Amino acid sequence: MAGIANMGIGMTSAGTRQRLVRRLADKGIRDPRVLEAIAQVPRHRFVDEAISSRAYEDSALPIGRGQTISQPYVVALMTEAILADGRPGKVLEIGTGSGYQAAVLAGVADQVFTTERIGELLRTARQRFHELGMHNIYTRHVDGLGGWPSQAPFDAIVVTAGGRIPEVLYEQLADGGILVGPEEHHGGQHLIRVVRTGDDYQRESLGAVSFVPLLEGLE
Ligand code: SAH
Figure 1: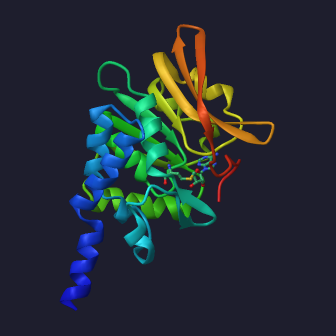
Figure 2 (figure 1 turned 180 degrees about the horizontal axis):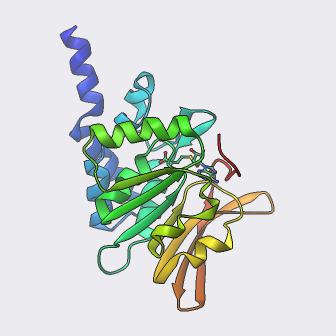
């Protein structure tokens, strides 16, 4: 019994997480705030216990209901993409899923507002935030395509499902705010980063990605 328990600790310990951090740094993630947040969040708590031994591999994993927890590299890349000078105040996430990306964002921003259309996934994520004492994450069971108007404007918006990013999300960006998310084009997805300056929106592509689809309505 002791042996099995120790093995579990070995696979999910801070040391294992530190190896993931080094791998992400090798892949080009530079911002120390992002690497620190990844080092702090226990990703094994955001997946089913049966696959928790794989939590610190740099890969997406199933979380049920046909959805996935994003690959750590992609989580780090998106988090880095929304950081400019200074700490963001309010960040909006579309697609809570496991809650992992929200937990990483909560390490680099003051407040995280996250929306999920599948009630069952959101309940599990809320439980995790509660158990881990993450009190700066606010959740809503809504179709995130409408954003979160009562909390707008946001310093950053992170979309974690792929599709056509609705205009209303851009409108909920603060001046100087940054949106990052996978946009669908001719059957392929590209991670885009858009910086708002007044009524001007500067966009760039951060490369090809593969996310689950952005869907309408609640489940
Ligand atoms: N950020 C998540 C990634 C989960 S996968 C994580 O770190 O685990 C993307 C999630 O987006 C799925 O849970 C899916 O149900 C959700 N989603 C898809 N379309 C949505 C919409 N319109 N509004 C809110 N959530 C949506």
